[in-house]
Length: 349
Image (cartoon, rainbow, N blue to C red; front, side):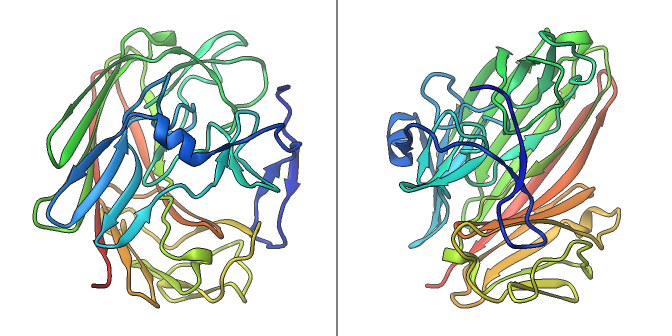
């Protein structure tokens, strides 16, 4: 497929963002097919059952170049309530981001991820000439195909996947990736652990990133948090520990922003899309404390991070609701950064 992206407003909302214009894919495949073919790991504690798919370039559930490939959560259940799962019904290799067809919502290979999946900003892209290489942490060394700007929905060639390993217990799994020979002196060691805390309803995601190269690593990372609380997101309330504001607010009939909370007032329509930033947070890690609840069923998740946020984006379509907190990564050669998120789930009995 020719690499052409044309911005087009898909939806009626003033807070909607542009989607790539693209023809319907010639064929698409049920997401159940991809899940059945992919290797997976089941983790448990006394309350939660979680399915995680490991990175695998041949058979993995997520093999794209947008998100961190390690530890994609395809299901998390507390009792009968499932919090994460596919927000799309089909996949197709030609699709950029996602599109709608007569067969349903079709995701492309670089957006077809699920759960609390993370995306790192690219490193060294602007320094790479066409045919040169750049870094995407969690993916590896990628090849720049032309002189066009970086496009997160585009599938880039993976030049070096790095050296990878995995270790697991009954309630945790740790993935490691080492890229030792990156472009222009970029190199790193990355470790990510997903752990169900015994005796609780908590998932902890821990990270260690070390700059093993000769160049500084300047990036950021956010968690897309593809949450599936209720169809259409009707009645979901998101509460922050600070008063929030939106420079590009969503439609007043859809979301009410009041004080430190935002509430979905009606179900989102088919093909309706929102993406907008919220402000009001400060420079303390204590602001990374976000509570998301379905006010009708009381099912929800509290997300707490241990690093200051640099940006918060809200993304929603009718099949998923996402609060996306960003944190900064700035590592001198030899430096190391550790950060973690704690998710506490609540579900009705």
